[in-house]
Length: 342
Image (cartoon, rainbow, N blue to C red; front, side, top):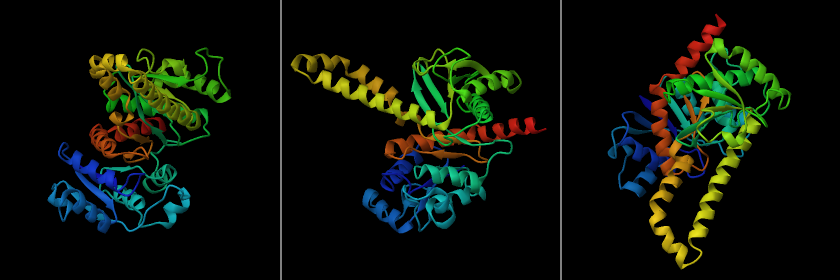
């Protein structure tokens, strides 16, 4: 397997991408190709590891030169069309041409979605691909779809999000009968705006024939209990607000705990026996443990890493990408939508 990594994408690139790739190379079976400015990457390799070439660190690592970068402020469609030798466009073309099995980037989200749709292509029958990150939840995890790719949706889109989520959880995460819920302001069938109400009726109607274990409407406060849902379905606008709010609450809880334990000598002493539990909690709540977000609905595996990804998060994202390819989730989604077409 070949993992294509956009070495120049993200706030901490290329330092974090290089270090994450080197760390992952010792633990996975796949080869990793770093796509980006070869001169810059080689200088970093010399600086970080004292080696002249990345291959001297591991035979699983290599570089594919790309002279341009897509910046965060670039207009997505314009950047994809004009920056032909950018690390992102080169990566997409390599994926499309069979020179890699999965492409990872922490770069411009809009450009990544545009490139995945225009260059790699949508699975036939899928109206809109969507971003599907995994979030920590009690005794497991929660799949969120969509997390920002489609701010305006139709009920058909939410139905397809539900179907793709179910297939992904079954094949990649090995959830036997994943519970799929529709994010809403209440659990009653009559609650919500027109999109949510229409989507509820459509998913409820189509769930049996599509193999979706639809549990109905779900409120945000119930999403992380681990007792109600394994995936929540929503439009990209609401999903992105939900995602960012969740990350913010996690950081706030961490800050509050630190402040409380540092208040005085007694609280500092009390913190000592609590440290192992606190570290486990911090690890469980950290989004870094769960890798990047998948673009479900495109013909080949594409993974969006967090824009502020550090070495640790790239390391987990690379490992996640390998599992995603091995699960054949894209093929399973393609096959299911082919059945519907027929």
